[in-house]
Image (cartoon, rainbow, N blue to C red):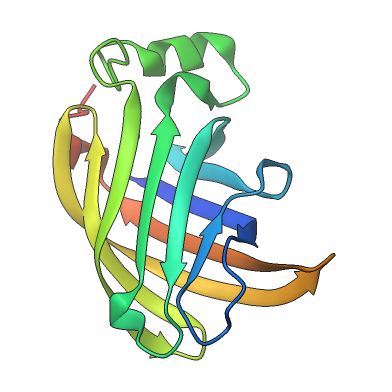
Length: 169
């Protein structure tokens, strides 16, 4: 049974859009170094998958994390579990029903620092026609200057129960 879905987002390679270090920094994904992946359990077997198209914006305020924000959009039609028949089934009305719900959306409502470069990010996740609050465990993996541009590595994970979004096939 596919009881829980683990959504793991490695948004590594975000490019900095502003250069002032003391001010909040705005990052967007570098598609060549970023991804949105998940793992589900089918009975006792783990099945991995990913979404090929997504976008996100992270505004990070190092001095006051409560002023930080993140928003993300995932194109559900780009789901890939390495099985075409399963992917088509996941797109239909038994699961995501992409004709009515083509995107998964996340919008943060609060950031709380929980350790060095570790945050709890609360927000609303809209999926399969329903919106529910979720908490992401977010890590800033590092930053560096690459050819004059500040880049950062971010990772966000959470565990979801698909039934909370009405996906109970």
